[in-house]
Image (cartoon, rainbow, N blue to C red):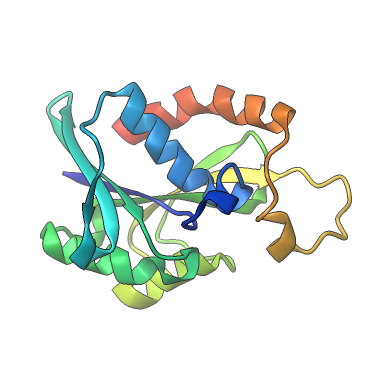
Amino acid sequence: MKLIVGLGNPGKKFINTRHNIGKEIIEHFAKIYNFPKFKFKKSLEVFVTKKKINNKKFILALPTTYMNESGRVVKKLLKYYKLIPNNLVIIHDEIDIPLGKIKLSFNRSSAGHKGVQSIINYLKTKEFYRLRIGIENRKEKRIPTEEYVLKKFSKEETRIINKLKEEIFRSLLK
């Protein structure tokens, strides 16, 4: 069984922002592969859906907390589904990777990503998978990272991300 968590922030103002790409990838994955509708689990602070694909069971999760509190939700999910961190894939934005590139990592530091650091802190381990989606495309490097990650993608950037989705889905099904 694989638990896949898409990181993002709640609320309409964060839709289509760089920081919400993990959440939006999960929503698109659920739609393409005809997962059942997401159900809210109040005690876990999350929306979840489950399905078997190619004889593998997948649980998709969308925390309802802000990015920096993701660890609390992930810890609850692992306990609830009786999983270990090795069964976990976190999908999130990565400022250190150029837009249009992805990297699958295991047992790596957060590199300053506060959502990932929250997960490491709560789980007390880095031994989980991370699908890091590159978002770096600044024309001006003077824009602070904290500001940049909350900016919306341009139409051209959205096209680049949409082309990546098939590659992302293939890596999730492994």
